[in-house]
Amino acid sequence: MKLKQKRLFITRECEFKEHGLLYRVNNLKEGSEITIPYEDILPDKLLRKQETSWIPLMLTPILIIVFFVNLVALLIGDSTEFTYGALIMLFIVIVGLSLSAYLGRRNEILIPAVNRHHFQQFIIIFEALPNKIIVNQFVEELTNRINSYLKEKYGVLDRDFPIESQLQNFLWLKERGAITNTEYEELKNNALGRASTNQSIGFKANPSN
Image 1: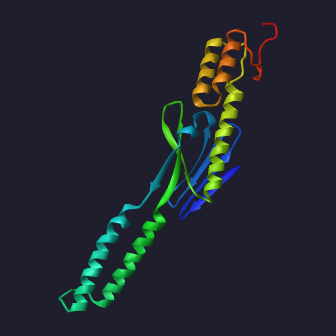
Image 2: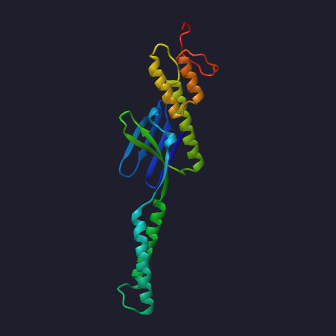
Image 3: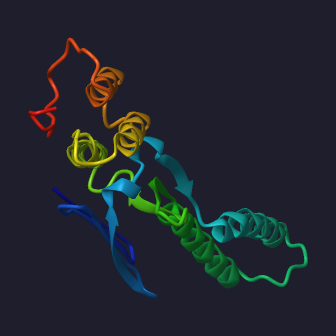
């Protein structure tokens, strides 16, 4: 699955790779491309925000007041430096600013990504491009791919490696939500050689042990 979004002068692309998510961003100033490892992406901690351009929002009501004050002054014959032509131009500016404020408003989803140096960045996508259903499907697919990848890589018991480090991996998987509490207990019991009633998880264990 590949998600491509374009809004005004911003283009964002997300593409699933074997070990991570390829994230591309292009705008008028610059472009960037990075592959973020699945281990670093935290889709369960995503944020939603509304981005708005404040300049047109602040200027528009001020100019509306100026427009109506001088329009009334012209209609009743009071002194004003504005002519009808100037008021028409001011009205066009107000409309332009209003459109700018409306088009500049956007709802975004921020998916945190924290690397091993504890530097946090965000995968930013538009919430409704091309529509909310497709975006929600993308987030769900991202979560499933991450969980499957982490479970396959870190959720397999290997007797050739220290048990302590593997137990830490299993606990990390549970905290990430990649495995359930039941799966965690199953992995832990098998690592510690305890009896278990659930054999639904495969292990790369030495048959002789």
